[in-house]
Image (cartoon, rainbow, N blue to C red):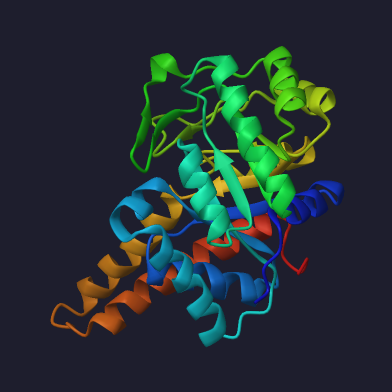
Length: 286
């Protein structure tokens, strides 16, 4: 299996001025779309397994599905399976035992000291096993999976708290809030590039951008230039899949062959993933 530690994959991207796309997968079809796109673009990628998918499908079936599809489609590019937005230490440990290559504990809703304490515990285990570890400081607005942060509670990460959190937890890559949101944007986002640059200079490690769907391409490219090395994408992938299925049914109202219908969604989502890979600059980096 072409699995690579998140720590290795993200550090390589950061050192060489590109970003890794961390694409959220929900089932067999979405995993397939991400894998095929990565193989065609010869790009390393992260497959993110988040809380909604785990609640609906279970962690083990999703993890096993990645193995099966890699074998079936003869995927050879570097792959990292990432646990996204876990809010339980125990779940992070389960993911580690199931051979995930990257763990994220999201303690952004907790008091600062408690966030540090639990994140560091996850980092310690990840380090011992050679896995990548991500933590989050600052609240990113919107809804992802079953986690919602109201706009009024969202906050831009300060340089001081980013540095304190980074040094005391030892995370390999740090998720910060610089103006993005999970879900569909009501207005065009405006990323806080000055803050991003200040955080990069302070922490001197890869930065993670959550809420990557819907951010204008020029802002994404600027973020990568300023130290973002992992970009999470979910909403645009789901939109691509659904729009593909809708377009197929519009022209084929009586096509009830499920594999054919799903393949149109896979193809549409694959195109979105390929665009993001090229935008992030990871194509040809396998």
